[in-house]
Image 1: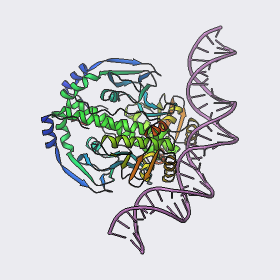
Image 2: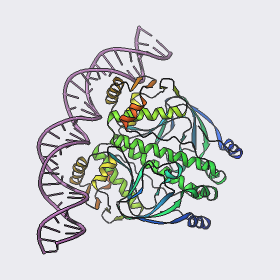
Image 3: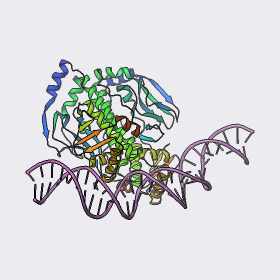
Image 4: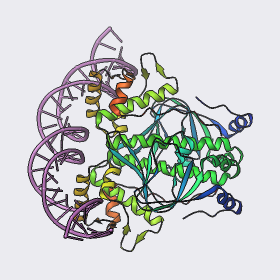
Length: 229
Length: 229
DNA sequence: CGAGTCCTTGACCATAATCAAGATATGTGG
DNA sequence: CCACATATCTTGATTATGGTCAAGGACTCG
């Protein structure tokens, strides 16, 4: 899942790391419009990145899982312009914004890892945007199911039979895909009737991965490991 | 527009740069599914990043303007998973993918610039995704008009009276916002009737920036310069 | 057992897609 | 200079996907 580290990198990370933080499910990790002196790596738990319009309409930009880097924007720009919310209890590895400079100067390999994360986030957003912009409701949901399956698989979170224990609700799916809750529900039911997925609160089962891929016209994204620099 | 460079940085960039490339309007700069040994900085011209489904449905992910970095994904992953198309003739500064490693090892300041670009791209995609997911057609177009105005302003491309000479057509706007061409046109006309914008092929005029911002509920994005590390 | 959170369903409505022409440049070869 | 071709923009009629409204049901947890 991760590439191997050199001795000095490990030392540096240990010093760079300024602590661990635990947040409860439902809590806000980073709030849009504020400035945070920290950035985080997710050690455990599920969350999501989100942006909300003044009148409450909300988009979930991406889901956050262990291994993800969160808060890079607040480290580079004045303010966060999205929020990060915890879905479950989460454990975060805390880094100081002010240490980023030293990381770039002294550990180019780790700096490279940071860009790698940023580029991966962009790639995910690209596909997501294609989905919301041009796929139908059923295609969007199929796409998201396969996406979540791939992410969960990379973290060994998929139980036999394609079962993913996840805190994601249909409300989150709706906000992630730009659909209404009602229409999301009806579409999920239709996919269930076609034996593609099944949904229970807290328990998502992918019954026919290939069928979902075909429906979504979702290219098998080659899941590359972090390249060694 | 750019931060100042140190002498050694300038030397390095000069060596890192492996040439200039010119492409004609309408040409493909980078193609989805291929691997490129180069990445580019845009010196002049307009282009866009794009993803297309098998049946031809297309999303424009972002517009590419001078100063932008393109092809970072092909430098970090095996393949591009989006295309970059030239709208006008473009001049690109060419870098070798294989030199990225040296850049990170020897010029942390420039490495930092690369992350900054990646993070900015992500921020733009975030707002774009909110737009396509949750804004109405009129709001989306208002948002895009303000977005383009801000980008053009940063590059001194706005003529007096809010006129932007741009190769973007209503077809591109439709694909960028997840709308049909017909509906895009009708909505643009309605915004024109409200004195917010006016549209002529090759010539976009922003008549009421504040009105558009209010309609789009678009936060004034603080346009920060590249931070010095 | 009651409160809260999700999920589910049906009826009705609206935004935006599709279809089908047609109008307006702009440029090209004869 | 004109006929023609191509790009883009425009408009109206019709359709459909998905939104909104309004309930109700199921499950969990204290």
